[in-house]
Image (cartoon, rainbow, N blue to C red; front, top):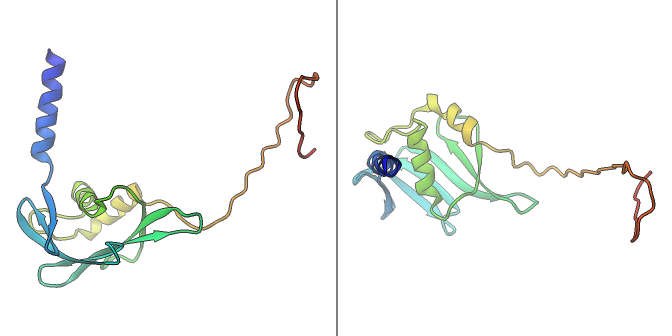
Length: 157
């Protein structure tokens, strides 16, 4: 019974501490307060987020490498590096904004981007999606060399 109460209390605390993020009419609302503006084009593949007075904050673009892996390219205004993160959910913008709040990059009260926390965000979410071709060949000689029933195919030495 104590375990059930503990799980329920943790769930309630989780719901109380999480932010209510909504994207509606080209605006981002956090806890029912208008926080940012955004534009998207090509079925939400290219997204740019702005402050309410029109200053560019960051962009999120969907990209694909030669292997067919889909990922996000994220760049913050005032931060030179491009962060490449794994493509996640259908509503990635909401999830991304929630991750920014959790990592302290976005302050949900005033919707300001904290550039000093972007490196921590990058360290956690950045993944390399370079189009390098890698071929792995495993040449493993079996320890047991007795003849077996069936077909034995040996490639290499």
